Image (tube, rainbow over all chains, first blue to last red; front, side):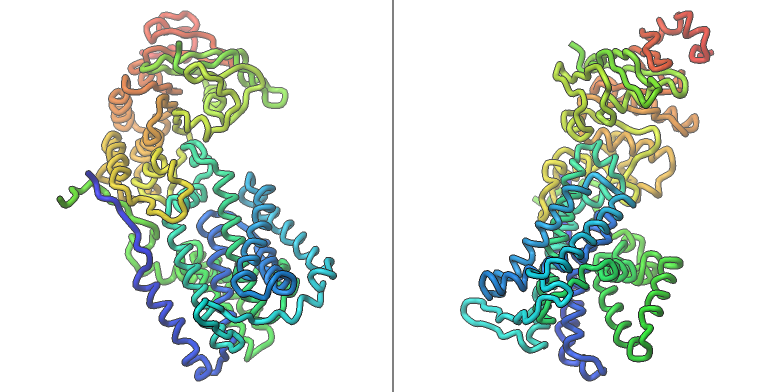
Length: 338
Length: 247
């Protein structure tokens, strides 16, 4: 009888990263930054992790993902105004609306791959963006959906007020931890390994019996749903929802974060990318308004010289096993203890 | 009744007829060969039989059941596996994972988004058995892309075998192999023969004639001769063609 090889639910570096994030409100102002930046970073890190399920784990170049983030933001606000001002309900609606948007897009593009897939996602992203601008009566058009409240987190016995940025930060941290745990589990599950197989060789995956279309569609739906969840948090954080986040250049931000951070080689790459992006915006942005020019140059340099991104820099000094992330199977069957 | 049958297959790409009235039958437990010159339509024929292309006319039958035009994944799930002439592996996976991902038990659990992919000791043992069969058990933890060419060819067959097929199509398995590699591959195919129904497309006539129970010759998209290796060696057309030069 052989021993199976399992992947832990969480790892020590994961726990360490969460602990570091948990300390951020204690020191962020002392280093000249501000509490809201932490909120923004965690929301976008959650979004980037969700996005990387399609780009990094499934090899599907979705360049219009802002549509799902934006759908979540609008759905959060609209649910709050039209259904019930309940945090859990509004976040669930944000997630479901974005997942439904993802399902609609997946229906049309899951038979495509590579550049055709990318172009179709851009096209759909533009459609959603355009609708958000034109549907003035629903979305507020270019003025956006304003006065979205930071709803309290009611957990039955107690309700936590999230109006303060520190409280919101810890709430977003809980969501971030939950999403990262879920995605970690998912990428190491049979579903995740099939996605990885499809990324490497779609034809072979089909010929060993996998319905590639369904897997690609499911990956987009899950990723869109979680992006929508991040979008809902973003609407709550900035108390509004604007069409900007659905635009092509905002969609480009999450691609940039994922690639700069090293999402193609590391589960945590998108998080590193989100942190880098916002620090660059605020730190370089304090020196020059052309911060994006400098960040863009870093992006170009990384793509040219280290396409594995920042995470790839660290993996370069690791062992071969570390470089090849993923569950390492047992090479030989081992006797089970009696 | 043959395990697998193709009846009067026709396929045309634009104005070019690539398969014309092709009928083939593969008996259970036998090793059948398909030979023919470059561009004869052999791989296209495999692609029709395994669902990659839908024929314009004709029928494909597995155990008497019409599977014409079914998708590759549907045909694979019915127990038909194939290897590819141009190596088609999961290069970033280890040797083990290449095989494990093709095992029916992992395929059945494919939609599971939470469970452990390789937590089942039975799955690990099955993958190991397949690797043992093709001589790659001691390289299970190496990345597929890091293997030497001959080992990659063996892994290509292992991925097909992992699906536990009733019928195995091998598309030019000796392509790119040196003489040692060909000998090793012939030994492997000989081991599999009998336990499985195997169909091989092959350019290497020595290899094919030494292994096959019967061979069909395809040329210009048609089956122009069929028989045992001995019958084909005596066939005047085969003798007159390049295909007959077997020393």
